[in-house]
Length: 505
Image 1: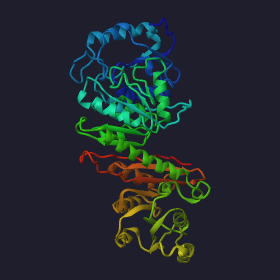
Image 2: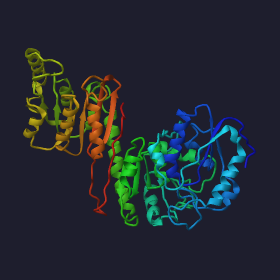
Image 3: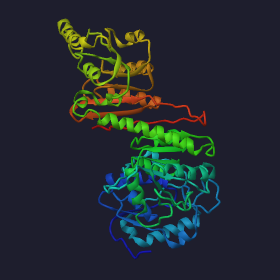
């Protein structure tokens, strides 16, 4: 232990338990307190110093736990550190807990310190308090002649029923190394493949230098994706923004609730972790990477042409064949023209009643002029468009086929946007796009943002918004109907692929 003594105002805490709980709750709470309440105090955290990269943006000192504590060899894959063999949910014994705090207090002046101890055990009180999360990354470059993939082969004694069998991990890495540069991560006491060595494989599991976490973050920052059964490394990958393929039983938790930065996530749901094989994982990640590459290619396609006109919410449609879509609120037809020029559209339904109050125009001649301008602009696409001069709630009755997308830019009042989303989302195919305009426009009667967020939360949709860098006035929103794929080896399993948020050129 160091002879460091802190004789100045500080905030002191510690952590000895499971890294996933720490990453998803406690460090986020401490970061909030540093930024919002105790800006002028130094934060001191007693824990494994390997974890310092996760808190180095706000913690001044990370101090290792006492040698006597480590010599007890307590179980740390839990909310606290109980003795080995303790039942799930057990706490650190009172004598050890008290001795640990007594040891910690030797390092600082208690009269100048604020002590904030973590909640005891399986305690979710932090979830009801403010938290701030930081995306982890690196500016370091990685040289590799192969795409990098990170694999975390969980193999813990606690909750061993959540371990994918070791032979499956071994066979998976044997196959991945034929194409990828494979980086193995984890801890020696909590991972399989500790001694795996091969060309095109870097094994960091038994690596125990101070920069271990920095190396993991560096490779995740440059990886095509990571593969893990739900565990601490899953949370690291998500917080690094590395596209993550997760094998587990808590899909909503990892793909949505604790996916703080909407990291693209593919999830293989299993009820029995033994019922997975290497070929199935290879198939899953092949599909996942293909989807990621499709999105990347649309974002790099036609930068000098398509991107000058096509709105952000519609760019994921570039390159998709024979689209059938609908636009609610055509106005002068400029957005319709952009879609028809930029996308492979087989049929586009153009929905606008052209009466009452069209974008603030109430005089009949003004409305008629707008309508004429739209028809003149779009007549050249007559073989691909269907005009429906009706209210959207009536027009939907004339659309017989399912849609690949709908773009909603009609009446922006909450009740109308809500109704349009509810009606037309049901018409859009699984995996299709429900999108619209003016997400963040602040004016009286604009209820777009409220309607979009409510629908997304109620229906577990992935919701996105983005400002077009070429046209800051264009603030789009979009929802993705989650794609569900049948799986060859387990008909009860599914993959949920979440598309990339705000990835603009």
